Image (cartoon, rainbow, N blue to C red; front, side, top):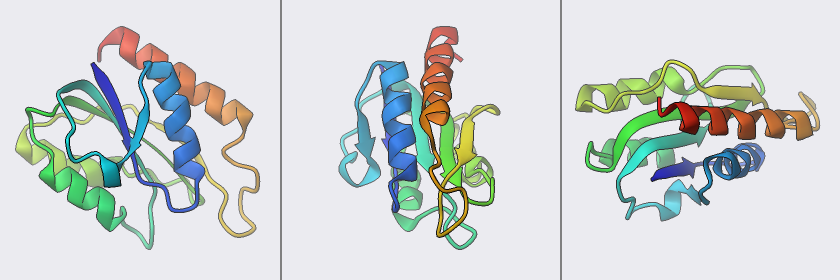
Length: 139
C-alpha cells in the first residue's frame, strides 16, 4: 500500500497532493491528520518552503516517522522560487534508515503576484502521471 501525506498553507501543495494521490490510487491526507499512518511501501511527502525551511507541522511529522511506517519516501511540492524540500526531508529521514528517492515532483506555486494560476492543469496532470510511473516502478 502507498500513502500521500502533505502540508499546504495556501492550497498549492494540496492540489498536487490530490493529483499525486489519484495517480497512486489512494487518498491524500494532511500531515495534521496522519498520526496513525500504517505501513506504506511508497510514502509521497508533500510540502513547500516557508522562510527557507519546511513547515513545523511537516518537520514534526517526519521526526515521528519510523521505518515501520514507510519503506521509501518520494517528495513532491510547490514553491514560488523553484526550491524543493527534498534535501531537508532527506536530512531528517535518511539518518533513521528511511530512504528518500532522488527523483521527486516539483512545480511552481503561486505566491502573491508570482506564478499566478500555478499549479495549473498541466502541472496536475504531470503530477498524476509521475505518481503512476513511480508506483508502477516500485522505486
